Length: 135
Figure (cartoon, rainbow, N blue to C red):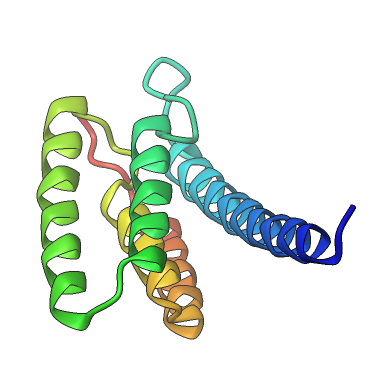
């Protein structure tokens, strides 16, 4: 293996490891939010803890924001993602938190890690202290 190829392989492995760790962070936060949402519901009303469509869209948003340069383009991408979030939330009709997961993916994609931590903690606390509506 030539030194150039070894260097390229090291860079690719480092990038894949970073994306995998961000996906695991997104999945864990989405799972915990779903768990907190389902905690006081009856078994018939409970759903899966992770909304897979929201998780995949959030991770795709994270990758796009990491790759695309430019602040104005970031605004357009995040605006489009919020429209997609509204469509996902309206079509699924679920209590699962779709908007915080998408915002978390946007913040991680922009490199605003402290803001992502604050959003995750705040979202979990809000979900923990709110009661579900009785039907």
